[in-house]
Image (cartoon, rainbow, N blue to C red; front, side, top):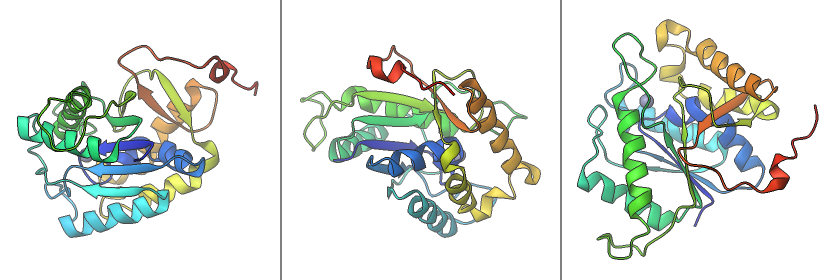
Length: 233
Ligand SMILES: [Zn+2]
């Protein structure tokens, strides 16, 4: 049983999309497991062995668990079998919260920041979270209710529903994204670092902090009033 399971379609999605928040969660005592659907074998740079090794390095930096599933890069689709795989993982790990790539992020021809696999991964996890609680849904593990499902952006998105400040953990976030050596200085014509940093600053600025990861909640949040007592800065 873990507090949080964070799903990504490819190695690097989680660190680029919400790595700072993951570092903060672990440093503050939450148990986190990353579940990566593919080994990034369809990526322009790196081979699957390298990318799996880089993902393990990133998970070690963050201090979380890591599991790979056997979806194929570029072919992540919402199928009955795929949903069952995700349901099984959820029922086995039994998280309170799941994170997934935003399931409606537009992916367009020129803008490489969103990938169809990210959207499919978000849809798969959303569907699996819904089905995992049904006792008669045909998966072997006992049913499990996920309390919350939140979406992260990889990294492009829109005005977030909430932001997790990771300013104090910025250095570890840089180490985590740098673990993806085959990707970090090659993608987006070599300017991925500054591109990611710009989004983290943008999301941080939404809550008057330097760096943040932005998230989207598709439904209203059940908020403890104490969490609304944001300290004055
Ligand atoms: Zn990706």
